[in-house]
Amino acid sequence: MPDGAMIWLRAEADSQLFLHYGKEPNLSEFASIGPYCVDREADCTALISLENLQPATTYYYRAAVNGKQPGHIAHFATAPRPDDATKVSFCFGGDTRESFNPFTVMSAIRAQRPDFFLHLGDTIYADRGGTAHHLPEFWAKYRANRDDLATQFCFDEIGAYVTWDDHEVTDDYLPENPLAPIGRKAFLDYWPIRRSLEEPERIYRSFRWGKALELFILDARQYRDRQQGTMLGKAQKEWLFEGISRSDAIFKFIATSVPMAGGGKDRWDGYPRERTEVLGYIKQKKITGVIFLSADLHCAAITRIPKSSGLRDITAGPLAAPLNRITNGTASRYEFFLAENFNFAKITVDPKMEPVHALIEFIDQDNRLFYSTEMKPS
Image 1 (cartoon, one colour):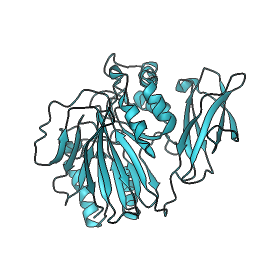
Image 2 (tube, rainbow, N blue to C red):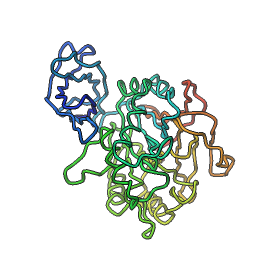
Image 3 (cartoon, rainbow, N blue to C red):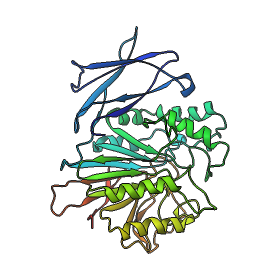
Image 4 (spheres, rainbow, N blue to C red):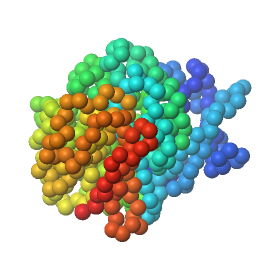
C-alpha cells in the first residue's frame, strides 16, 4: 500500500508491545504506537496496522517491551502512488518444507533487494515430517520455518505478500476437510494479512505499485466446489474480473498458487470451464498486460497457456522442497522448463523504458541467474 503496512510480531506470552517506526535507519527519531497485547489464541502473535505513511518510502521499525531492550531494527518499503512511473521489482516462489532447512534461497532473494516478495503457497508442509492435526501442531510448523535465520534476515528487509495452497492443511484438500478451518487460522495467525470484520477469513486481495503493475493475489483453495466446477467461487471471480478490467496499470499480475496448465485435477486442469471463463473474459474485454504467476509444480517454467490468445504463466520454485522429477518439460506448451535447483523468479518493470516490458529472471539458491526473458504488455 502507498500509505500503510501490516507488521507481524511474536513475543512472550502476556507481553505488551510498542512499535517504534520512522525514516531514520537507526531510529534516532521515531513515532511510537501501542501498547498491543500478543494474543495467546494466536500463538502469542500480534498484527499491527501502520497508517498515514508516505508512498515510495523506506520505513524502519522495531518492537519494544516494557523493561527490556528494544528489538532489532527491520525495514520495508511502501508502494509508489498509482500514477508514479517508478521502477518496481519483486521476487516470488513457493514451497518451503521444514526438513529442507536452512532455506539458503532466502539469502539469494534478500541479495536481489526487491521491493517486495510474494510467497505463492505451501508456506509450510503440515502433512509431512509429522502430520499436524491440532492448532498447536500447525503453529509449530510455522515456527520451525520462521526460525530459519535466512528467512528472518530476508523478512527483516523485504515486505512480503502471501497466499496459501494445500500443504498448509493437507495434500490436495478440499474445503470440507475438517482440518481446513484449523489450517486457515494458523496461516492467518502467522502472516501479515490485513483482515476485515466483514470477511475475517478472506485471503484474496490486490496491491497497486505505481504505473508499473497491479498484483491480484488469488485464494485457490477455500472456495473450491467440484460440483459447480469452480476454484474461485462467485464473489472472488467477480472481484477479479472487476479489478483487472478497471486497472490501468501497465501489467496485471494474477497470482495463483497452482499453475494454469498441467498437473492434474488439483490444479486449473481440474476446473477447465472456469479457466476458459477467466481467459475468455480477458480476451473479450481486451485487457492488456495480463501475466499469470504460479508455484506448486516444483520447477521453473514459462508456459504458453493453451487457448488463451498468447497469455503466459510464470512458475517459480521450489524455494526449499523436493524437485519435480515427473513433469515432461519438453511438452510444447513450455517456453522454458527446468527442475534442477531451488529457485525463484524476479520480475522488474520500468515504465520509463521504451518499449516498456517486464523483465523475467530465474535465479537459483546461490544467487545465480540461469534464465531471463522479456514480456511486453500487449
